[in-house]
Image 1 (tube, helix red, strand yellow):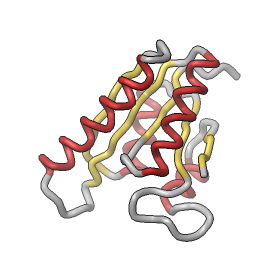
Image 2 (cartoon, helix red, strand yellow):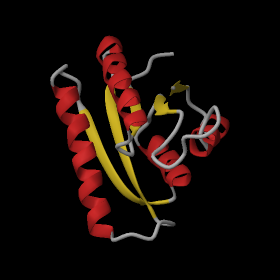
Image 3 (cartoon, one colour):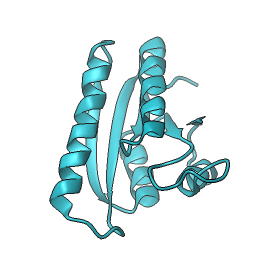
Image 4 (spheres, one colour):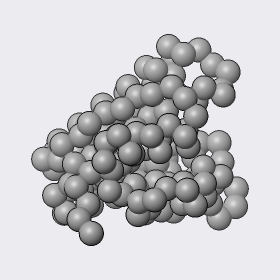
Length: 131
């Protein structure tokens, strides 16, 4: 199976930075494009503007790092439910694989975080999990 569009969601955490770095290297080696995703969680209580600014900064950093390797990035900043809407983006962008971190900002207990666990169980594309 050829991977041409590699989805890399990021929340900006130290864990997701490892996944981003790995994903960019992988995309470079297999000549794939990156679908960078940041989801403004509709279930969180915060100011939208601050989350939007944070999301844009995270996505721009992914694009900048990928550009250093000559890898093309399409940025997707969306508001919604992380699992549901990442799945929709994966389908709409024809993502062939996804690189995710095992834990997010607020979930550092256990072997794997709840979102990563749900992605592994529900996505129909290959999932690369970064510890």
